[in-house]
Length: 526
Image (cartoon, rainbow, N blue to C red; front, side):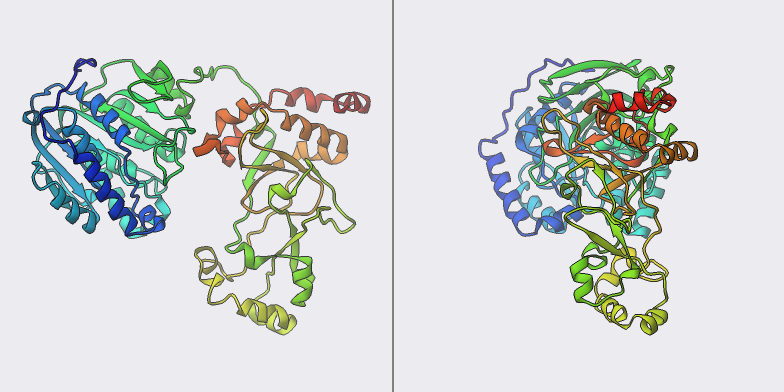
C-alpha cells in the first residue's frame, strides 16, 4: 500500500473545470425527470465526496507516477475532475471512461475533449477489457432488479458468473454486477473504490459479493456514511465506499469506519475476517460489537411465523370503505376487513365488533372474490360492472395480470399481532409498533403479520391476558434490539423485513409462557 499521508499538487489548469462540469451536469439532469434517471440509476456524485474518494484512492496506489484510470459509469466525470484536481497530469498515463447514456456520453466527450481521456458510449456489462487499470473508481448505476428486463438480467448474471465465478441472485442490484465484472479490468495490485448502497451488507443477495470480497481480493476498508448524511440529494439510500486491492487477502482484519467523511470518520474499528464470515449484517460494524453466536437467546422465530401483508395490485381499486361499497351497491359478502395505515391505528390493541370487524374510526374492506367472471356477472351484476372499470387500468398491472383471475387476492389469515415494518424513532421509542389484533382484519404489505406456532397459539387463545402482556412486552423491546436486525435509510427512516424480524431477540419469552397464574399476569400488566 502507498503512504496514506502522501500529498498531491495539481499543475493541470482546472480553475473553472469543476464549476463548468457541474453546470453541464445540471443541464443534462434537467433534460430528464427523476423517474427516468432512477430507471438508469443516474445519481451524480457530489464534488466533495468525489474529491475525498480520489484522494483516498491515490494514497493507496502503488505507482503514483503511472496512473491508469477507469470509471465504468462516468456520468459527466465527477471522479475524473477530482483526479485532475488532485495529481500532476504527468502522473496520468491513461484514462478511460464508459457511459451508457448516449446524450451524456456525447456531451461529456465534447467537454473533456482536451483532457486526455477516452470516453466510450457503451454498456459496461457488455464490454471486455482491452487493457487493465491500476485505479478503478466508480459510482455504478443504482438500478433495482425489478427494473431490469428478465432476458437482460439473465445476460448480466451469466456474464458476472463467467468473469468472476460468482452467481448472484436475481434480486441483486446492477451495482453488484458492475463491481464483480470490474475485477477483470484491474491490473495486479490495482485499487478499486466503489461508492455503492449499504444494503448489500445486510441482504441475502449480498452474501456472494461479501464472500468474494473476503476470499478473492484484498479488502482493506469499508466506510459507511451516516443515514443522516445522505450523499445524494435525489436518492435516500445510505451509501458505503468499498476499497479493495487486486491481490490475495493480506490481513486478518478489515478496517471499518462510520460517519463523518471517508478521510475523517467518526468511528473506526478493525473487524476480523472471521467475525465478518459469521455475521450476516455487516452494517452493525463498527458501531456495535461482534455478536457471540455461541450464546443461545430466544428469538421471535422460535415462537412465531412472520409474513408480509398482501400486495393487492391496486389499493385504491380493491380497498373501499363501507360508504363507497354501499354507494356502488356492491355485495358486502365478497369483502373482508383490512387494517388501514398504522397512522389510523391509535392504540396498540384493536378490538372487534360483533361481526369481527375492527373497531376503528377508519374502517376499510378488501374486495376478495373467488368467483369466475361469468359467475360474478350472473350473481353480482354491479360487481361485474365495477370490475369492468378496472380492466384497462388495474388489471394490466404487474401483479394483476399474472394472476389466475386478475382480481383474485392472496389468501391470508388475520394475524394475532401486526408490526409496522417502517417508521422513525420518536422520543427514544422504537420506530416499530406491535399491535394486538383481536379482529378478523387482514393486512396489506404496509404491515408484517405475526402468526404464533400451534402450541403458542393454543396458549394465547385460552388466555387473553397473556396476549395483552405479550403485546406490551413486544412494544417494550428496545429500539436497539430492533435496529440491530433492521436497516436504516435517509432521514432516519427504519425498516425491518420478515426474516429480520424473525431474528429479533426476545429473552423474556420463556418466562412469559411459563406464567400460569392470572394474579401474576395482572401484576405484570399493571
